Every structure is written in structure tokens, then in C-alpha cells.
View 1: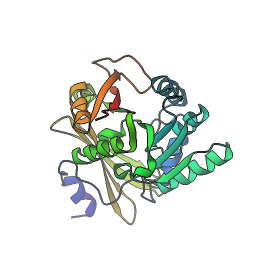
View 2: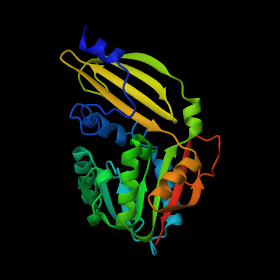
View 3: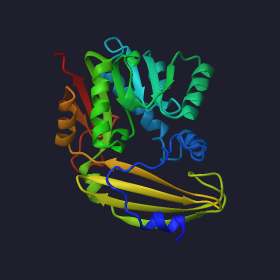
View 4: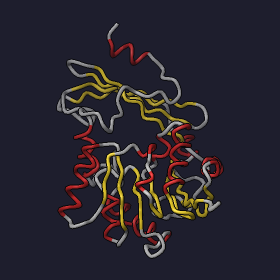
Length: 279
């Protein structure tokens, strides 16, 4: 039995990780960075007009005069970090991808922006990244398993000043309900997101208990097979508030997106503004 077939037949356990995070995989990182920077590609980043609206809304939620220091978690190539720096904030951006941080540093230098960037898994935040506000955009929170989400929440609480703000968005329970299990093949004769080499990619979506989705990509080139598990935990307002409360946060606002759209129970995303309890 081939390695590809064995992977296709195996069902991953809940939150099972693959051998290498795709953000740092040398086969994927160059294409992923290009996707981040492509305004017409929603795979890695939201459209520029949405990011601009998000920056405006975040600035209205946490005015620079009261919350001058921002920590941008999972900053990628600096799309949010640069916009917030232009609005006068002192920004620290952290991301696990060395390639993304290298690009972000070069871009900040070209644009004359004093942004502090660090290669770091944001689940393992350090006190040196202290801030008045933290942001985690594009539903990254739900990509983490439950234990890692708890650790992240606690670490963010620890790096924020008393009463600091944490803004994050997630996919909603309605997103889970609307998702359909699927299995599809793609032949990329000229390369694609997962590798620049010609390859075949199997994409399988499975639904797990407790509003968890798995998008599993199995990629075969002429010389190897790789699998990438991308998990998405979806939330309702109550379940997200419970996780926040467990780490010492209180929900002070809920919207339908990180651009400040009105909350819609039938919407695809939820955004919360959390304040750290001062006790």
C-alpha cells in the first residue's frame, strides 16, 4: 500500500498535529507569503479594504491615547501591524514564520515604521511583549486545540497591563452548521500553495464533535507525501465567553467581525473585545 493511500485511509484523532506546521514548512512558506500579499487571494489574508476598516475599528475600541502599545499576534507580513503603526501605536508583531517576519521587518524599514517584530509561537508569549492591547485576527484562535487556547489566553492576560484589551475573532457555530464534509482532488502540474513542485493534493473536510472542523490536505510530489491538518473550532458567544473567563477576561463587546460589523447570530464570524480583570 502506498504512503498516499495509507494517509487517505487514516482518520486523525481530534486535534492531531501533523509533522510540521505548514506556516514554517519550507515547501509552503514562500507560497503562503505570496498569498498573504495577494489582495485578490483570501486564502491567507482578508482584502485590504477589510483590514483598513478593521484598523479603524480597533483604534476606536482602544484609542491610542489610552492603549498606546499593541501586540499583534500572528502578525504575518505585517498587514495589521503597519496600519496600526501608521495610526500612532507602538506595535510589536509576533509570528511563528521566520519568512513572514523577515518580510515584515524589511517592509517596515522601507516604510519608515518603527515596529518591533519577533519570531515566536504566540502560544508561548513572553513578558517582554507587554502591551496595553493584543489582537489576534483572521480566526486564528480557533485553529488551536483547547489546551493551547487556554495557555494563550492566560499568557495574553499576563502580558497586558491591568485592564488591558484583547480583540480576537473566531468562526461561529453557524459556520460549523453550514460546513459540509467533502473530499476532492487537485492536480497542480505547475505547483501551488503546498509546494512549487508539480503535485497531487487531496483535500478532505471532516466534522468532529463540539463544533470542530478538520481540513486535511495530503500532498504527493514525485518524491514524497506530506499531510497537513488544519483544525477549526467554532464558537457561540457563550462558549467563547467561558474560555475568556477561565483566563480572567470579561467580554465587554461582541460584534460580527473584527471590522466592527453588527453581531448577527446567523453570521459566519464572531469578534469579541475582552478586558482583563484587574484583580
